[in-house]
Image 1 (cartoon, protein in one colour):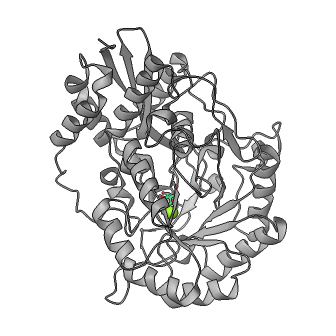
Image 2 (spheres, rainbow, N blue to C red):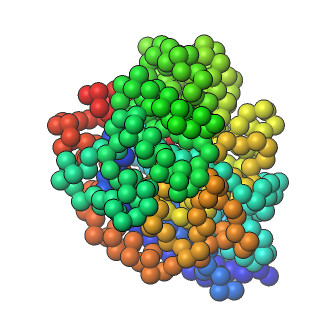
Length: 446
Ligand code: GKR
Ligand code: MG
C-alpha cells in the first residue's frame, strides 16, 4: 500500500506588489495567493499554489475531508470527487474573463488545482520521479523558456498607499522595477534591466493602458532594443477590431503574435472579432480570455479564432493543461501559459507542466520577476538565460520554508477583508478620481 495523506493545511498569504497597470486598473500594494500543504505517512510534504482571496481559501478548506486519509496514488479519484462536489457560486455570472472583469477571475480558476499539484508533488517523491514525468506522455524537456513580462507602471507615490519602493542598492532590475514607467523609453529601460538579470530572449508587453498607438510604439521601441526577440502585446481585448488590424499591419515586423487584441463589439463575440483579426492580418493570435474551458475552446477552434492557447494550469488543472497541450500539438496549434502575480511554487508548477507539454511551445508568461525576492521555498532555481532548468529532484522539486510561509500568512491576516482579493480599481482612483473599469477603455484614457 502506498502513502496516505495525513494532513492538509490551507494558508492564505500575501506578498508585496508594484503598481502594475492592466485594463482592469492597477495592482494594489499587496497581492494574495492560497497555498496548500499536504503531509503523507512517509513524512513527505507536498505543496500547491493558487489564486488568492477568501472565496478560493474557503473552497480549499472545504476539500480537506475529501483529501485527508486518502492514498496518494488514488489522486485521480480524489480530484474527481472534489470536482463533483464543486457548486457554482451565486455571483458567478458565467462570463469568465472574456472582458477581463477581474471579479470573475476566481471562478475561472479551478481551486482544486492546488490540491492536484500537492498530490503530484507527494506522488513524485514516493516514486522518485519529477512531476513532469507524471503528466501526459511524460517529461519532454529539461528546461523551460519564460518570457520577460513588461508592464507600464504608475507612480505609486501619488496614491498614498503602502507600496514598497525600489531598492537603490540592488542590481538594475531591483533599482528600476518599482519606478514609474509610462513611456516607451521607460519600458525599454525596465526590459534591459530584466534582460541583464534574467537573460530573457523574448518579451511580452501588457497593454490596455495607454492609447493603442503609444502601446504599438512601445512594442517598436522594444523591437529596436532587442531586434532578435519575439515580442507580443496583450491589450486584453480592449482595442476596436479596426484599430487592432490597422496597427498590427503597420507594425507587423515588430510583433510576433497578438494576445487578445480585440473582444466583443458591435454585436460580434470576441471569438468572431479575433477570427476576423487573424484573417485580416495573418498575425498569430493568443488567448487567455476567449478559451478558458473546453466548450469555449471548441467554439474558438471552429471559428479559427486562435493559434496559441495560454492554458494556465490554474484554469485547466495540471492534467487538463497537458491534455490541451497534446490536442494543440496534434492539431498544429501552440500551447503556452497565462499568469497572474504569483510566488515561486507557481513558477515551478509552470516549469514542470511546460516540461511535459509536447511539441513546440511558446515561452511561458510569468509575473514572477515582479515578485522575485519573496520566495517561499529554499531551493527555487532562478531564471537564467530566460529559462528555468528543472531541478534534479522528485516531485515539484522545491522545498517549502515554513517560516517564510508563516510570515506571508501573517501579512495576509493583517489585511482588511475587503482587499484580500484583487480589486484593481482602488489604486487607480487617487490617480484618476472616480476611475471605474471599462473593458473598452485603456486605463489612462478615462
Ligand atoms: O496582472 O494585471 C495583470 C494581468 O493583466 C492579468 O490580470 C491578466 O490576466 O496577465 C494576464 C493576461 O495575460 O491577460
Ligand atoms: Mg492575456
